[in-house]
Length: 161
Image 1 (cartoon, rainbow, N blue to C red):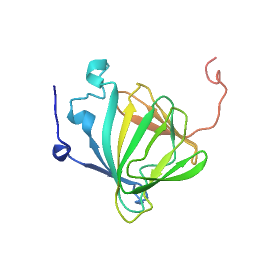
Image 2: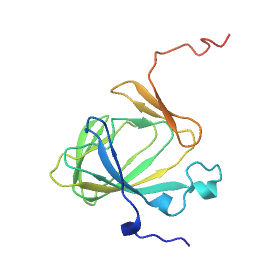
Image 3: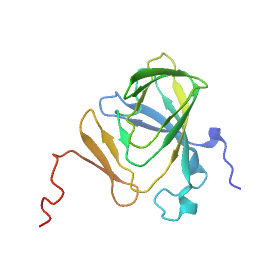
Image 4: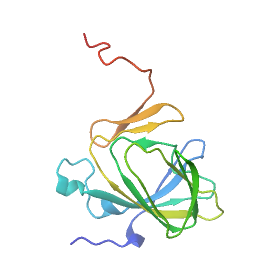
């Protein structure tokens, strides 16, 4: 058995250049030995677990949907706002919610205190994200990297024959 304590896991910060998106993540699965780039399912783990902290007035990331990933959320503290296809919903400590593949969502913190939650996601290989507000895609490349692309619709056979 491998055991970690959340207090021992370093918090990783990520902030967009303009500051609209700002988050702090503790990757519990990585601390427990998950190897994201491995093709060995035993090393990849069947799901990812992390705690996320979003500061006042910030969002985790732009409105997006995953092509293959499912995500389960459990709010620990604070108050958040969830945007989905139906509009926005307020969530607080103890609330749980789920997004299957293809369902666009965004998580923000409109309150004066930090918004903290667990996210548990399966980790399918080859997942991509679509950003409806900007028409961009984040597509998987070699290893754990991704590429952001924005293009025009094309015929399936364009450039193929």
